[in-house]
Image (cartoon, rainbow, N blue to C red):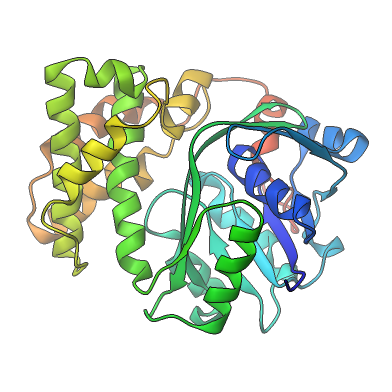
Length: 328
């Protein structure tokens, strides 16, 4: 196995889980974070409590300054979508001519943003499916989801670097598929996450409670069908039965799961409504595709987009220190 030099930008629940798995497998991983979470990792290392990988602790490299790391083989963007622009600006020192860039974020825009900043040749399409959270500073807990990864070239086809990366993730215990149609994989994940995050945030309930009611199950199905219809209007070859298959797959998941936007809403943190259901509405208008269920979710959650007022340090682990000063 080739040892990869990896940087994870935003080492919260998702980034800490995948970064921790790669570090345990022997790769040279640096976790980029800030605040109490960074301090805890620097002093005591990272602990991962996982239903997939088991529980483990390890000493990790952690910093708030990507300039200390330099160019890497793989840079994983794992911040919340509302922090993407700042994170991309800060991660420039990590990117060399052969650096592979992937995003674990929700939504369909990360690859475009990364490509605009660093060029399309460096960017791979990627999706992850996991339920992981930062339990407390220095401790990441993966409570559900398959922990799976899909990775592929944005232009399609399979290449040596995609196969190598998939092999590295699989060897780390992360079920990973090298996908010949990354654009389709990203949209299939988008359909899933708009339903899961949108509905669990709207209802403030886990998916088991949503599927226990006929009305919310039907709305869940409508959300999925609308997103899939918008994806097809965007030119993505999504299966006709995608909404039905996603619904049944989600029914088989742990009933206590709440989507990431639901967790953020309940915690009083900013939510990704514009990048998820709001983005569906935007594209639906562009293509003349009705999206009433996604509109209802967006309208209900939009007032919560900025999160509740709270001290900045309480959510500091979700951000990274910018390389250049940022006006308050």
